[in-house]
Image 1: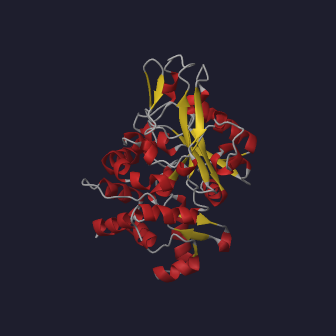
Image 2: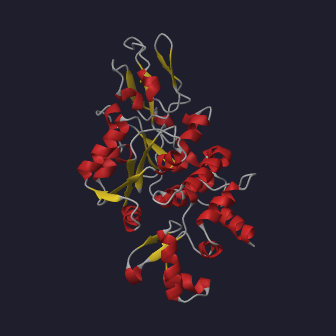
Image 3: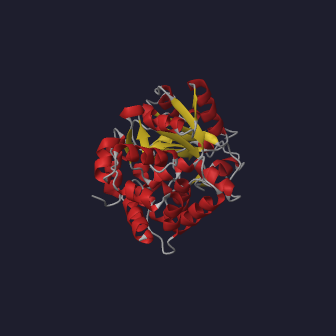
Amino acid sequence: MGKGIFRELQERLDSYSLGFPATKSGVELKILEKLFSEKDAKIFLKLSRALESVEDISMRLDLSPVETSAHLSDMAQRGLLFHLGTGNSIKYGAIPFVHGLFEFQVRRMDHELAELFERYKNEEYTTNTAVGIPAFIHTIPVNQSIDTSLNIAPYEDAIEILKTQKQIVVTDCICRTQQKLIDEGCEKPMEVCFMFGSMGQYYLDQNLGRQVELEEAIKLLVKAQEDGLVTQTATNQNPGGICNCCGDCCGVLISLKNHPKPAELVFSNYIAVVDPDSCSSCDTCIERCQMEAIQVNDVAEINLDRCIGCGLCITDCPTESMQLIIKSEDQRKIPPVNPIEQMKLMAQMRGLD
C-alpha cells in the first residue's frame, strides 16, 4: 500500500515543471516517504495546481472543512503544498518538485534528507531534466557586463526586475544549504535568492525568508555576482523570483555543465567574446566561468557551445578584453509572457500533454 501511493505521488510530480523521474534504486520514493505521510500523499493527489478553497478541496477529500483546513495548513507549514491568503480566503494548491518541494525545505532539511537529495541528483535528476531547462531557467547577464547603449529588455536586467517589485523577500540558497549538510559545495554567500509576489508572501508566511528594501536587495545581488554566482530567473517576462547560484552546488547548472553543449539548453540572448589583441592570458576568466567554456593558450578562447551568456568573465577581466554581446537577431529568443505560458512551453518540450 505504502509503495503504491508514493509511486503514484512520484508520477504526479513527474508531470509538473522539470519533472521528478523515477530511478532504478527507488531513492525518489525514500525522499517522498520522508516528507509525506500516506495521508499527506492521498491529500496531495487530490489537489490541483490551481489554487482552490478549503471548501472545494474538502468535498473531494470527503472530510469536513475544519479537518481539511487543519491538515492543509500543516502540510503548507512543512513545505508540501502552496497556499495564498489568510483566514477564510486562504487557498491551497499542489506544487512541483522544483521549484517547490525541494526549495521549501530550506529551513527544514536535515542531513538524511540532504543525502537522499544528493543520491537522487546524481542518479537521475541532472541527466534526465536537461530537456526542460530552456523553458525553466533564463540566464540574466551581470549588469556591468552589458553595453548600456543597447536597448535591454527589462526581463534581461536583474536590477530592473527588482525595481518593479512591490515586495522583495530574500532567502538562503537551497542548493548550498543542501550541499553544506553533506560537507560539500562552496563557500559563496547563502542569502542570495529573491522571491516576489505570492511566492514571496509564502516564504514570509512560512518563515523561510525575510523582507528587504530595494537598496539592500540590489547590494545582495551585486555581491552575489561579484562572488561569481550566476543570476537566473524563471523563463518568463514576469518572474516570481531571482536565483543566484554556481556550477558546484546548483542542480540545474550542474546539469548544464555536464552537457557537451550547455548553450543549446539555456535560455540566453548573450555570448561572451574576447579581444585577442588586449588579452593578457591571465586565467582570471577561467576561474569565473561556471560552464568551463574558456581555455587560455596564447590568449583566452571561448567555446560558444558552452557559453551561457552570464557575463561573469567580463566583470573581473583586468585588461577589459572580454565583452558580452547580444546574439544575432535570428538567434534571439523572447521568453513567454507569464508563468502559465512558460508551463505550457515546458510541457511541450518534455512531451507532455
